[in-house]
Length: 406
Image 1 (cartoon, helix red, strand yellow):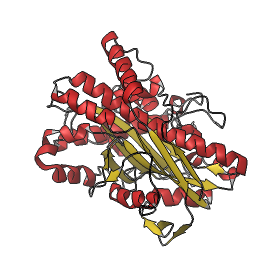
Image 2 (cartoon, helix red, strand yellow; image 1 turned 120 degrees about the vertical axis):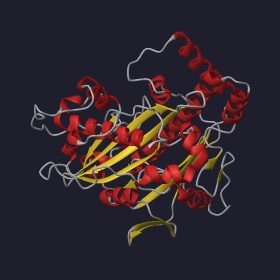
Image 3 (spheres, helix red, strand yellow; image 1 turned 90 degrees about the vertical axis):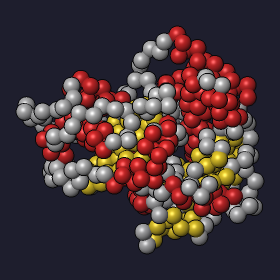
Image 4 (cartoon, helix red, strand yellow; image 1 turned 135 degrees about the vertical axis):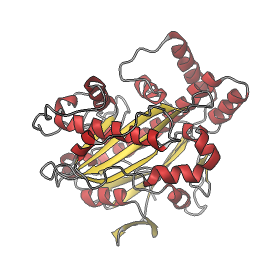
């Protein structure tokens, strides 16, 4: 069994990644107070945080009957299965990482002491730490794979698109080999699938012998999704998986966007990831950052995933989902969530406006103006879906939005 263990890795969160999680637009200059809080959170964690990383190679991998079996344990992630099949992966590494409980405990104390600013900045820094740890795990695997003439695929985690977070406990038991493996830090999965400490993450990294497939398919290039700086194994720039799209014909002059086109262009550049598949279909992911209307305006983040058919077919909407972003806690402070969490999340999950229709129909979709940052009301949720679909439409007709040196 091949294992990688780091009980106290040196964390180096890039300022740009931290600012992104704080909700600042790309290249924004943060104010003096925010800068002080960001520096304070970084220094606090450097003094008190106890991060760790663990990864081990699985003994067996089977892809059949619509599921992925790792060491005999079945998982139902269609996205993981597709990635492993496309790359012809022959094995996977199972990884776990945690920022430790210290930041979470301190953040809770700050909240009780009526220090919401300090609470928020420390919470977001701990989330940035977890992202950095997973990136470090991937870089360590890349170092090993390079010597073996193998390639590492982008990681997948329960809670990501098309992988039910409820399978988190099953993956954690597998990583631990039902207790035979002792992780460097304490970690447990609740019945809901949430991890405790919450600033933790589990991941599966596929491994393939077919380096050419990784280089040819955008979805399989981990470097574009990895923010780790100064990595000697980097093959391509960090783009957050933003490829340059095939040049499209200009958008019709009659296109009646409900949003100012400058805002659409900015969102396309900063919040949208578009991936082109081999068959010409597309996958789009949009990160929405908002705030609750109560509870002192807690920040929240949701990921919108949209599957589209080909350009020739008019980009029909084939799949849609809206879920809290990994590590987001702000959604739990929405008043409707507090009142009826299952009902609210079920409503968010089943709403798929314009499903099966050409993407361009969003331009004629008349919806009420509801600019609230939360998701409590159906009108607010429709408003956000409209922004997401209009941004995707704009990006597809303005491929210059995506520069290869981003």
